[in-house]
Image (cartoon, rainbow, N blue to C red; front, side, top):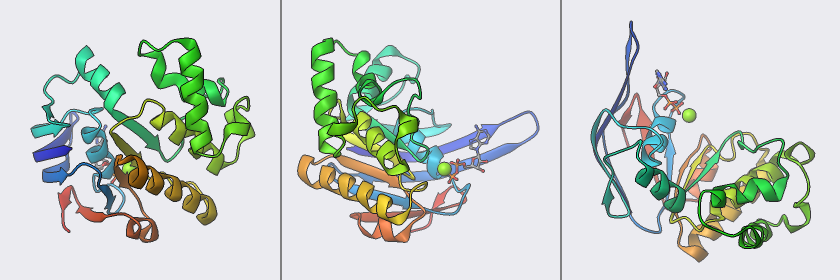
Length: 221
Ligand SMILES: Nc1ncnc2c1ncn2[C@@H]1O[C@H](COP(=O)(O)OP(=O)(O)O)[C@@H](O)[C@H]1O
Ligand SMILES: [Mg+2]
């Protein structure tokens, strides 16, 4: 499903060069729930952003769902990203001025989905994360765990093949974190969604199929 070969990422400013990723090879088969751990600054988010085609590697090749990705800034890549990938972030990234259902249907706005179908799909996604009764709430009226469940609903509303989650439980207490993990695990087991999750929490990582560790931009385990 995801194949990275010799991926390198170097950030250059006028004065310094930072190697965020150093020769990463990674193969994530379809249906795998993979977790990535490592100390702060080791390149986890950079790796996830490269897998998510949000960031372009300095070297190496990447294939997602059988397709080699070459042109990052193209419309075709934007469409591919929108249709194949769902993103979940530590700080939720909900839009404060939109209510829950409008937040969830956002990814569908970039596709040719009618307003009626958008509402219907968003309602189904919200139901699957147990928030059918919070459609008209605004993000500020929700708990952290509820916000992250809205973010999950938004990530899954378009039925992506791959979910990329960057410390999805990082801002949540353990009860809410467990709830979020349960939803992700269910999605992986029942829908076969491939999931790549960055986490600081060994307990969460243990619930996934496989764990890799990064240190200073290299894979160490
Ligand atoms: N836009 C950027 N410009 C320069 N350096 C960056 C940029 N983004 C990340 N880095 C550097 O790359 C390294 C990896 O960052 P990141 O992937 O965010 O780490 P992690 O998510 O593991 O904490 C860090 O040393 C960080 O300072
Ligand atoms: Mg990070």
